Amino acid sequence: MNATVHLKPGAADRVVAGHPWIYQGEILRMTQTPADGEIVQVKDHRQRFLGIGFFNSKSKIHVRVLSPERVDINEAFFEERIRAALALRRKRLPASSSFRVVNAEADFLSGLIVDKYEDVLVLQISALGMEKRKALVAGVLEKIFSPRAIVERSDVASRKFEGLAPAVGLLSGAFEGPLWVTLNGLKFETDLAAGHKTGLYLDQQTNYQAVAQCVSLLPDARVLDCFSFLGGFGLHAARAGAARVHFLDQSAEAIEAARRNSAANGLAGKCSFEAANVFDWLKANTAVQPHEKVIPRFDLIILDPPSFTRNRASVPDALRGYKEIHLRALKLLKTGGILASFCCSHHVPSGLFQDTLLSAAFDTRRILRRLAVYSQSPDHPVIPMIPETEYLKGFAFEVVR
Image (cartoon, rainbow, N blue to C red):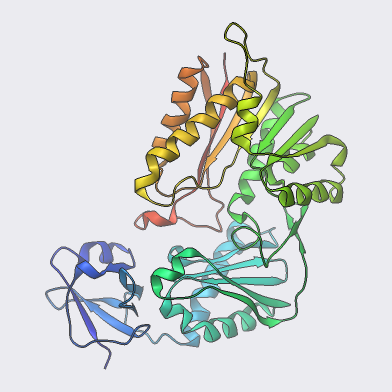
């Protein structure tokens, strides 16, 4: 019989509401000591059954709930969950050939991410219980997708909190070198073995299109794509009719990949590229003498930086960083121009991010009109009762004056 984990009074409400994480401090007692990675059943302090999940004594998250019912965690379980997740993507992104298939807690498979890049799957595991069932999961993925290859990118820092070492390699099939991935009809060269995240920012797929629509409001637009990575936003803007797009990224490798991507899509003539620290570049390009003014040069500026914070303690520093890049960007935007800005930190809520942007507008004496609010693509679904599933937020603002 599986061990039973009894929760302290008051600790069950979050689980009943749908949050899958149970912390060590929420546990009242256990009927026996389960092995790490083992399935346990969870009950409240009044013996009411709440669900089953993976146990791990090494993690602060002692239990990751998988189901509110007594079910076997076997091949049929994973197949049902993954097929349900796939059906959601087919419904929400019917034309996409690359997307996130499984988004961990948002698809009720805590600790498991599966991304589909054309005919190759990338698997990422961040929980011990899921790690022990890796072969089972990979077998189900083979059955559902028949992929050319399954690549593992379990190299996230959070694995160490589960007592796990990084794991990167080929789980099945044959795959070498970069892969050309199509997003919204544009081709992107992607390194699945060493790229950011699992290779690309799939969570921005719908936002690439949405921000590009701003170009229709800006005749002969000059665009600045900051933190451009492989050129997602900038190349969509170029295709939409921008006259000129300048790509900025600190990584010389990313800039060269973006340059190749521009050529592959027939857009190289509109694009220029620069490997530079974005903070330093913005500072240098807004530096003037005390009695001089910055001459605005751009019609659309896109800010899509990596996360500035990994925990709540570093939020104040992150907000200073966000304000700094917004201050500089607003000085470079023409009146009537548009600022599209994103934050991918769960620890910075949407309202706080907007307030930071508006504070920069106040300091630069710019009046902004909000045009759009952005979130993560629908293949990264949000479950409101699991706040951690919502992390990407963004806004488009027009400079009124």
